[in-house]
Image (cartoon, rainbow, N blue to C red):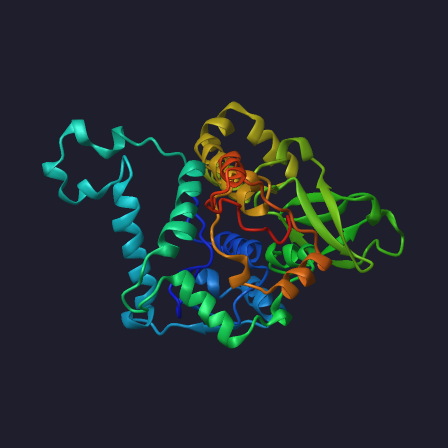
Length: 374
């Protein structure tokens, strides 16, 4: 996500998974983690992930206007495409193992083949990418602006105001709106079994109430932990656990999807009537064949988890995030955000502390304050 006016990175996210609502969810969370708010207008392309009811609901809740770029009109996306090109030339193409040489495959020898020189894991790449986006690129003069993106952003904030009404104070509510739901949006509470979401049953003690049984409740699922779901019961979001929680805990939605597709394919080959249940999926995941089939996806999910933890605030001390907080909100705005949600302050480095004692002006290495942990 970028600011088209000042050409500044607002939020970045990398993943092994193809573009989907999960990527939209993480970009939105990263933007709120950095600035405590979302843009008033978002311009998107014609991707299917931007046309879902889930994405439209999130935008409607926080009063965000969505504009769709017309197809076959490349100039409407020129700021974003130019930013991607700069990222490639100044960052990606300078990393060990980049695939720039593969443009001319016949001229590439085995000694310089990028596949043999890949050393970057997804988590480490994400840390360095954020350092480039939030610190390096943010302080480079832009020819179209005559100043750095960081300075242009601060100038725009000074002219137009901080707009404290755009601050997001209730982070728990925001998290629920970033989680996807089912096609129906609700699930029926079955007595003694709970709610059924995507062929899996989830249970919580709050569902034991007789007034709740046999009623439809709104549900949300965590695409990175299929062992957990959320149900809106009597005005409160309740955390529910799967009947096979030990098996599905930490499993991504994509892994469960791959396992379900494989089970359906096998039954289709033998022309049998087949009802997919949570028990059958759990048994397949724990089997040897299931482990072989899903091993690659599990390795990808393990790396994706590092990116998810960084965005959700579990690795705040390791996050490399730059930018002036006063360029985002004023002191009054910070106090407003702090009153709604505690703010976790970063630690100043030992080198900066030592230089401060000597009387010199240290480089500000304090990470940008997080507006809370999801």
